[in-house]
Image (spheres, rainbow, N blue to C red):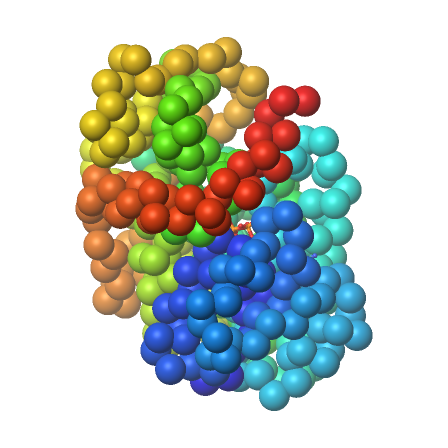
Length: 329
Ligand SMILES: NC(=O)c1ccc[n+]([C@@H]2O[C@H](COP(=O)([O-])OP(=O)(O)OC[C@H]3O[C@@H](n4cnc5c(N)ncnc54)[C@H](O)[C@@H]3O)[C@@H](O)[C@H]2O)c1
């Protein structure tokens, strides 16, 4: 298949591009290369992938990029919750207006499938139980941060187009971790801190729950949805880790992976966002009933991630300063 991957130089996009080029697909990446996108991520793939450096809000560039593509997989977004608190307009422009342009131009070019990457954050927090696909209400009322609100609006937009019969698929995914993640996000921030001999700052008591999904498993899930998903449908994608992994437990697993004593290396700091969503948890029965089954081995996958960061010091060291800036404000 000829596949256009927006945001393919970012974290999950890169994992997806590696997976799909390995499967022999003809992949083109459309990416603005913001601070979160890395040309160097794709360099090892050589001419297996083409890179178009452009903004998804640039309609003319998008119009050209979608010509002749079979599938479009739309990852490109501003993705960091903390950054969204200081620049919500940017998040609205890229995540909502950019998505609209991507969908309109992809449909005009008659692509066979358009897969929009959404997030479990559109449902908001859930004290117990799991959100099903139909539990997202129209609008952004369930979402809490400007990031989540922009993604909720983009999700609605994609659903509106799907209702008109457009060949759209949506995946709502839980927190990912793995290779190529910019070290501003919790897990790579903690790993790189430990590798630098610094402590892990865990917010509050570290009891927040995120359903950590290994990005290479998410890449396979997206491929699965493209091949087996029913057009017009939304699919939750999650690891469904059992037992659930609280943030403090995730920090402990990382310390153990580096043979460090968690008591010495974890530092509990005041939560800068005490009202923020406490627990994300979604039901994956719909996708699993089609035959999808992820590898559910978080401890092994955490270790693989640590190993990746150990082996890619040059990659993350040049990103660490930018990653920390936002926390120093
Ligand atoms: N990371 C997660 O845990 C997670 C969980 C659920 C859903 N998602 C969604 O998955 C997608 C990818 O997330 P990620 O963590 O890989 O993000 P990321 O921040 O690592 O990468 C985003 C990519 O989009 C590109 N980009 C940003 N603005 C652009 C623009 N205007 N035009 C073109 N390219 C632009 C960046 O250069 C970067 O390469 C996002 O849509 C995000 O909302 C992420």
